[in-house]
Structures are given as structure tokens and as C-alpha cells.
Image 1: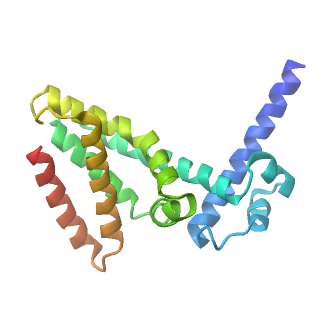
Image 2: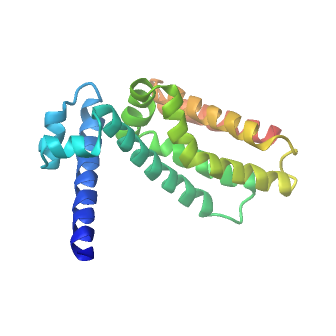
Image 3: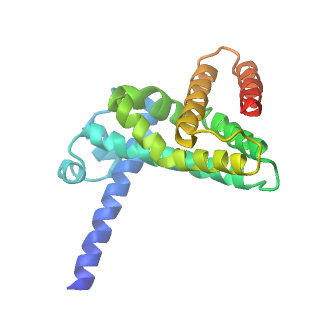
Amino acid sequence: MTLERRTQAERSAATRAALIHAARRLFAEHGFAGVGTEAIVRAADVTRGALYHHFADKTELFDAVLDAVEGDVTERIVARVLSDTDAGVVQMMMNGVEEWFDSCQDPEVQRILLTDGPSVLGWERWREICLTHVLGLCESLLSQGMDDGTFERQPLRPLAHVVMAVMDEAALYIVTQPDREAARRDMESIITRLLAAL
């Protein structure tokens, strides 16, 4: 009985994963509005009933897709930040910024996280997903900088929100400019000065 239940749970998890994987690819290629549920179930090789068993509607599926994309981007940022722990905290943060900007060159990240995310889910839910993944890292680095004297001690959570807002706006600016390389250089220079001013 336990084995049977576990097998059913595993099948259910596999179906959910297949739906998220298929929808992620389709949303990245065509945008949320350009993808119907029929295309998603066909690409995932599941029934429409399976889709609605796991997700109330296409928007709820998109929510899960955005969460997965945000999670993957965060993993890459954390790995980049931790790749040089001997660097000062400002350099560690800049390593994270560079990885964020690298990730934003990916059409999937641009479409799902930056373009469709806020409009499909609403700013509040979009931001909630982002904060769930990244806020802890930002607070941890800022706290480390305050503890070692790099940054002036100040209210941590409000500062983390300001820093994250700067990173998001910088990414949006870069991906909309005709010369993205120049825009990125400008933003990296500005962010370096902002962090130094803390």
C-alpha cells in the first residue's frame, strides 16, 4: 500500500514537472499570451485533466514556471557570489550583479521574469516570488558588510529592498537599450559607486 501510494506520488510529481518544463519552453518562445493550454498539454504529453488537476488555470502554471526560472537564476547568482569568498563584500556583490546581468541576456529570463512576470501575475505576486529567492542573499551580504565595517550600519531590510530595486531596474534598462554592452558597462559602474557609498 505504501509503495503504491509512493508510486502515485512520484507519477504526480513527474506530471507536474512535465507541465512546468513544457510551459517554460513555450512561454519563453511565445510569451504568456501566445500559448494556449492545448499546446502545453500536447508538449508535456499529458491530458488536459492532468493540467487542471495540478493547476487551476494557465496563470497558476505560469506562476510555477516563473518560480522555477527565478530559482535557477538565484542558484547561478549564489554560485557566482560564493566562487570568490576571499573577495571583499563589495566584490562579492558585484559578482552577483554580473551574474544577474548575464542571466538577463537569456531570452527565457527576459520574457518570463522581466516582461511577462509583472503583467501576468501582478507586481505584488511577481515581487513576492523574487523576494522569496533573493532577499536572504542580499540581506546576508549587506549584513556581512556592516559587520566587517565595509558598510555603515543602517536598517537592513529596507536597504536590501533598495538594492534589489536598483538591480531589477538596471536589468530592465540594459535589455531595452540598443547598445546593451555600453548600457551594462554604465550600470556596473554606477552600481559599484552606489555600493561604495554605503
